[in-house]
Image (cartoon, rainbow, N blue to C red; front, top):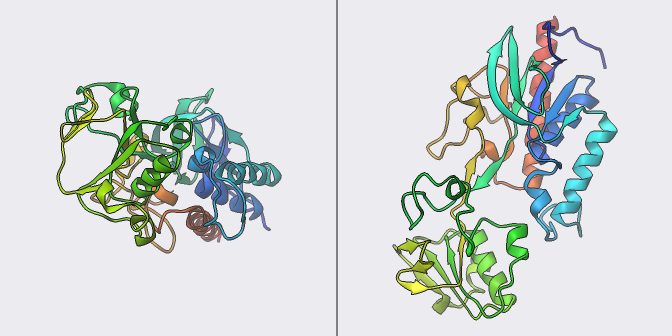
Length: 318
């Protein structure tokens, strides 16, 4: 691979691409760029790599390339691939601000001793579970913990390790949401000994294979009211409320770039290249909702962005 000349900015570290997010999409993009002969850097807000894979304790049987592995094991392999490709990784690095600067992008944040500069920017920051709404659903407005989906004991938001750690035995459980995660976790709570489980859904979007397994008398369809403080749904008392309202993108730090968003807040991209409306900025994986969300499509997104960056660098060098 030819080493193409790149713009160099005086001051902090310089890279061909800064990838924000260490899940499957970000790791894939960084590894491919490194293997293509370029200089990527990866920044991850948590102290471990793997994104949502890291908090998935179940077998990832949807990943045809790694049968029999849990999400955490998939995350370990992502970290190993980055090490073998020699990609510099900043962990516990929360990017606070990104702006266009000197023909590239300047990044600042916790975990960075000085601003970092890259000629390309890749947003792979993924999603977080959408919580109950502060100011509604019996959640106090302005409550920071509520905004993060951690308002009170007895209310669990989204799938993951916190669900697995829960003792369901003998508990009355309400599940909110009509997607796959809601139905799967309702079934999980029953399997783990819950005294009763009732799923509340305004509409059902889940796969029929999950819907058919949950007894019909456990499902309430249509509007419902939640009081998180009292831990009630439609006036009925519960020991535990589980919230599966889908996902929202983690991209607030990039507001200065003025990126186009979908109605749901996800970043709009070109389907072929993953480039956003801002030249040199790419968005991959679930933060852009480009394809059906899973590990395999996220990996493919990373490759698409890496190849688009390669083409852009080579065009500049001509």
